[in-house]
Each structure stands twice: as structure tokens, then as C-alpha cells.
Length: 459
Image 1 (cartoon, rainbow, N blue to C red):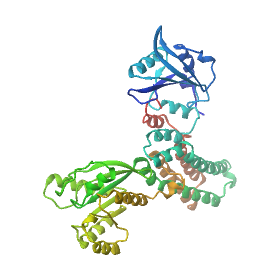
Image 2 (cartoon, rainbow, N blue to C red):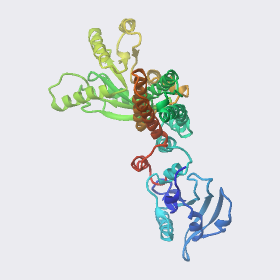
Image 3 (cartoon, rainbow, N blue to C red):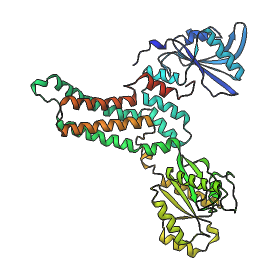
Image 4 (cartoon, one colour):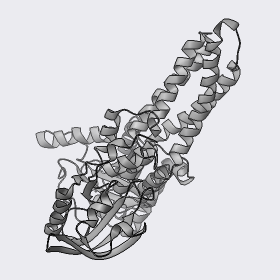
């Protein structure tokens, strides 16, 4: 539990999105929030009502009625911030919302800073820092997978693992610190072999969490998927078919797409960022050449490449050459033979025998595009995520885990190198520090300011 002294003021913000809507919800938090609202509310005496009750009445500025509202009461500590919280549901007129907020500011409330409600919840011990960060991720989740990952973290899945690791390490740290107090007596309270076993076990878990970040990153931000191939292979037609809209220009003229076109599609609860690129070929057209360069750069950055071959206009030798080049990129790729409607079965059978994993379709056929979506989903390894394993989605957590790993490896090296207890203890303390940064046992004002400044106002 953190010091609450600096939270005595009452903060106010609009909790619903800006813009005209059916209702707007104005949120206040602070010790005086209920008494402050009571001054301008005409209805029941709010200071005599129970927590988690809703009351109808009017908000008045002197004798002037601003709006008819519903007031929801959450009395400390039974609220999101663990302070007295009032939520006022008024009509969603920008004018009304502005007038109501101004009344409360004149009565002594102050506008909330970005993320200040969630920051107060953290400071008051409602949840730890990793869970607080998950609140923002949950708000921004735009796919089922991102929602699931954020919800799991907010409910303490990730924090539980980190806290368990930290508690085990604290025990050994205390034993070694005790040895330092008895340094002249040559006693050993902590078996070095047991410590090595513990640290190696912790490293296994931490390495698994570190490796999960690649998956966590695509879950949170979407899978960057590049659609590439020679000019006129049907890339733009495929993009339009995937998105089910005429997003890209489709033409028989090679080199129509000069730059890249990007859009997002949810497949099986996972967001994919599809990027339609300029065709790969030698060209003297300066603008097209720049597009080709950008295509090659995008392919290197992708998590998945869908490479289209024009079955009607590409030789087997050329296909094999392109496949070898793709293998050298190190990026997972899907071989896609397009324009199936323009070739005979003999060619398809020949290619299938050489490349059993190649998919054949006509981008104009919706049923075949659905099969492609299924194959795309298979190529993104979500087994770990589907099992419910903890997945790291936050770059700050990832960095702290890397630092923890380095510190734990230093502990092992120190034990093997027979370094003195004070150096082993220092490396353990460093590991504890970085683990504590994740969940908030170790914080600085700069760290908190950086985290919560990225939240929206009102959350």
C-alpha cells in the first residue's frame, strides 16, 4: 500500500468518449467527491446513501437546472480507485457535459491527468503495476486475442508468476545476507547447489516469458503480413478479396501499385495487418523502383509473407528461384499459386509434387479465399496462447525480464567462479529489482509518469 496523503484532492474527467452521444459519464474520485456532488445535486441527500446505489435528480448551477442525471455512488474502499467515487450519467451533449464539469471545478474539483484514476487505484493497492498497464491494453484491444491477453494480465495471471519467482528468490537473498552478518564465522545458511537449482529453474521460466514476447507483440499489435510477388500476379485482387472491398487499384497493366497499401482484418480472433506491395521486378521507372525497394524492406520486417505466383505466366524454374530467395529471408512465408482458373491440372499436379505446402486458388473465388484465411491462421503459432500460458505483450516487461535474466546468469557465473558472498548478493538484489519493476514493488516517479501519461483522460 502506498502513501495516500497526496490524493486528498478530488479529480474529475469525462469517462466516455468525446463527441455527441446518448449519454456522457462524468467520473469524480477523492475523499470529498460525494459531498462535492451533493452541493449541486437536487434529489436525495447523497451523503446518507449506501455504496453501489443509483439516484435520479438534477444538477444545478445556482437556480439554473443543467440536466437531469443519474448519480452512481461507490464509497471507499469499494470502488475502482479505493476512494469515494461518483459517476454522473448525463445527456451526451458536449455543451451539457462542459457545463456540468465546469460547475464541479468551480466547487473545488480539478481536471484529472491522463490515467490518473488508474494510477490512484495502483497507489491505493487495488492492483499491481502490470495489472494497471493491462487496463490500457484492454481498452485498446481490437481483437479477441488481444482482449484475452489483456484480460488475463489485468486479472493477475502474469503478475502471479512474477511474484512467485520473486518470493523464492527473496528467501535465498535473505539467507545470503545473513551469511554476510556472520562473515567471520564461515557459516553457510544457503546451499550454493540449491541456489543454482533455483536460479536455473527461474531462468527456464523467464526465458519462456522472454520468448513469448514475439507472440505477444503480434497479438497486441497485429500480425504484419506482406502480400508480395511479381507485377500483375494478382496481389491487389487478393487484398480486395481478403478485405471484401475495393481497397486497391486492380489493372492488367503491370506495376500499377507503386507503393504499399495497408489494412487490418480479424481472422480467428487475431488481427492481421495486410500490406499489398509494389511488384518485384527490375524497372527503369524511378517511382516504381522506390516502391520495389520499400517492398523488399517490408518483407524483411514482416511476421508472415504471402507470396503470389502467377500460374499462367511463371515458369517452374522461376518459381523455384523465387522460393529459394524467400527461404533466405528467414521470414515464414506462404506459397500461393494464383489464377488457378487459367491453367490446366497437369501444371498444378506437377507443382504440388514439388511443393506440397503450396496453396492454389483464384483470388476472384470467395470460397478459395476462405481456405487461404484458414491456412494463414495455421501459420501463426497460437498454441501457447490457446493453452492459456502467460504471454508477454508489454515492451517494458520484456526489457525488465531481459535485465533479470542477465542478473541471474551473473549469479550462476559468480557461484561457479567462487566469488564472494557480497557480489552474489548484489546480483540477486539486482534480479529482484528488475522483477519488482514489473509489478510495481520498485517504482520511481518518472516510471509512473511515463506509464500513466499514455492512458486516456478519464481512465
